Length: 222
Image (cartoon, rainbow, N blue to C red; front, side):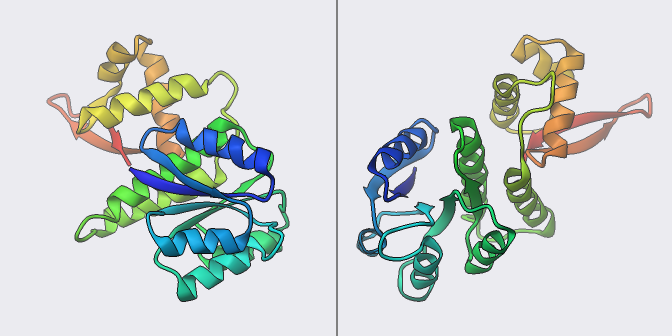
């Protein structure tokens, strides 16, 4: 379970964000804080893996708090949530070690995508060692989540989520035919979604060659 501290000076917004976090499997709200001092103290007490951190706080900016935690606090990751969409602010956040940058207002689906990408990173980096392929997949997952926009026309978030769940539960590479059977959609629909998710860095593509010599596309979780 990944424990999240929700930090926002607006009590109402903090409650909404905490509710969003609680709806994502594998995540738990460790607490809420409404200023930098309270957030810093909560992290120092332990039991926090991730900060969902507002930039504009009454006593210190979110970026300043992030830097202070890097210097003085225990290891904790940061997803920044802010209305500030200036390029310089985004660049500054990346240099401070912020993993994701979410611009307000955002939807539950938008935040869920960031949290799911973080969960993949969190799980992968718990391993003893990583080869280059797995490192590239981790970085690709974060980049895809950071740049993901609305679903293309003709696609739905619900079907994309279902197909990702089927692939993740498979425990190994699966074909479009296998996915279509489990999802209850046509093979062509399954193939379209699998290709889209692979291009977004959310699935990993491998080619399996059969007797015909033509490769079959198989997909696994990134």
